[in-house]
Image 1 (cartoon, rainbow, N blue to C red):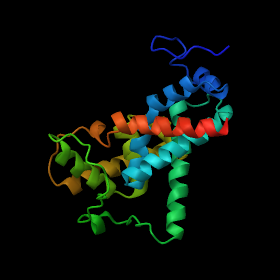
Image 2 (image 1 turned 60 degrees about the vertical axis):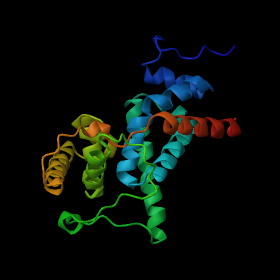
Image 3 (image 1 turned 30 degrees about the vertical axis):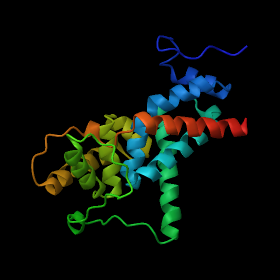
Image 4 (image 1 turned 135 degrees about the vertical axis):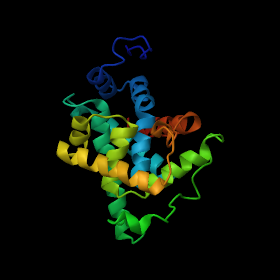
Length: 228
């Protein structure tokens, strides 16, 4: 007999290991709950790396599908979000390597001064930002896109996702001192690039709600059904 779908008040809801076990047992409600719980945070991480909305969404879907197929490997040594983040990073880097081999990847300059005038916002990105804050948010996203990748990733994990130094180091496989150094450098670079004081919450960047969230959930669930 199938287990009941997870409800908001279910005591299992906040237990990563139980959620993983239910997904491994074929519980689609648990899989959907995992995706909806982590969609926004993981999407923003992918978007910060790839700098393209469509590619970030594709990587997010691939990550969830890979997570579903490998959920038996989750042991709860780290949080489910950290486990998914590391998987997503691998997907992003694999995509970058593939693109690089085709000669279509824009390299991130080591010297940020060489990029201060580059605006790398992709014209294909859907215009779903709120009109009242869209321009400010787009500016901050553009400047964040200009940071070297290693600094950009740390900034998103620490300042946007509010992960601890320890969690960020574990996720990226780097020393905690490196996390602190890169985060400090990223903040300094952003202040220089913005050239003015922007009172803008980084938490609002790269929204992934509504239709975007539903589309990713539906796509992954459909892919899972094909392999069951």
